[in-house]
Image (cartoon, rainbow, N blue to C red; front, top):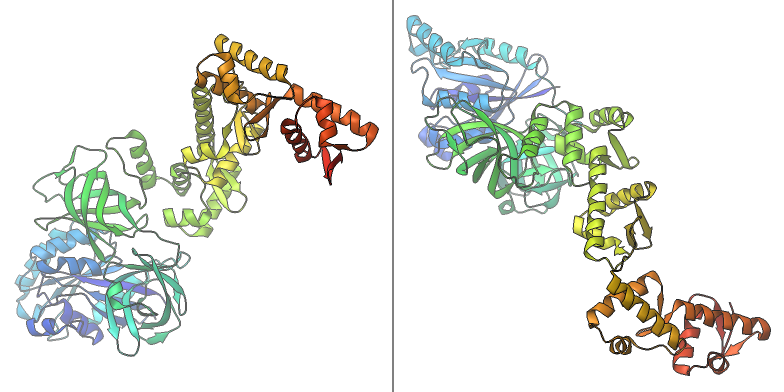
Length: 630
């Protein structure tokens, strides 16, 4: 069975709710105020089992201009619209506004239903029909069937059912390969059950006991029960309208506009990049930073609009924009939206999300415009490439699926082609991918950062591996992958947690070279009774910072060796001490600190740290108060 979402649209009091009741036997006006006023205030729901075996999940929307916000919560995922005009009134303001909204939301199929035909003569009916056809010319309703209907006489009801059935058979089945996603349009509490949310499952499969994440707040819960018009069901498919009983969640923790999804599939955002089209009927162009109301999914979100590629967008024109919202929302690439001015609340346009998780952009930036154009008009290959290029590092197939709103199987097919072309690389086989150009770009950034460090600190041979990663804010896996590439290309030398450019050497100025030689000679002269650094500085009679910088470089390259904190030995002296020790141990087998002190003609203060150093590098081994060769 295929589940098709069918919605109503049209001016207030044109008979939308009466039509749905005649079709299904269900009164979609559930609120007390709706009964009292005889007018739909909020969206209502019904269903219609069709002769083909398919099911039409029907959403009835309010027609009054004061309730456009509620109307928009119901028309975000329509497969088919029943565009309703009353014969006795003809085309009215909300008739036009609803048509504009449907066009902007990308609704593709519809049926024109002229209601209340029992109230007019045929000549008048012909005039109304002509005016409607003139209105819908050059829209998706241009060739839509026209059904004449009367809730009083029952005229047209069977023709309408057959027409709905015929069109629904041509509607493409919704994608169940993507993780489930349910925009919430109603929240209430039911005695004995707890919190219930309702909505239309826009993709995926939802099952009892599934864990769900509630966005934008990010709390997690579990599905206790699922209900459709058939009653309790064990699972729901994309396209079905359902009620979901959630475990351990209070009703005040949810609201219309929230989204239920598979944990980790979606994330909230206050920035959205999009393609926006303005209505031709607007009187003024759209200015940069205009305050707006964004209608996305079932929610309304306040914010400002940044025009990325134009100074202003004129009526009937389109442009690339970034929404900067005052609240978090949840969307994915390809989601349609409507934009109204903050005040007056006038529908001005709509469009499609290109990137639901962008960075904040500067206007008229060439690379941003190129990126968004690729998101908008590119092939699946282009989309995957651009998404990987825009990413800070590597992405998994699941990440790509979320960002470009395509099933994993479809992405994997395209990836095989791109990997064979060597355009995309496996950062970790079967796990993380990276674009070849992004790989080259990140390697260059690492080299440039290293070069900058060497230039800034010429007396340092190496830099901390972590310092470079932290500065570039790279993921560890991506960073290590880039370093491996740079090592293979002989661009860098990596020693434990230190790294440097392969060609880098410490280069001293003539004055620094002079100080360096003086420091070395001072330690070589003192040999096994080395001075502390303060004595060196005092002896050289130069600026302390000049000495300490060169001293540090000698330590880093191993010319000086730190035996213990504050005690240093020249490596030539250390090698001489090692040879003396080796000769003695080879002949005698073991040595005490006192015996070694006499050999070095030093004091215990220096002899013991030298021996402990040899223990540390496993040249010697201590047994009681003696050392032997390790």
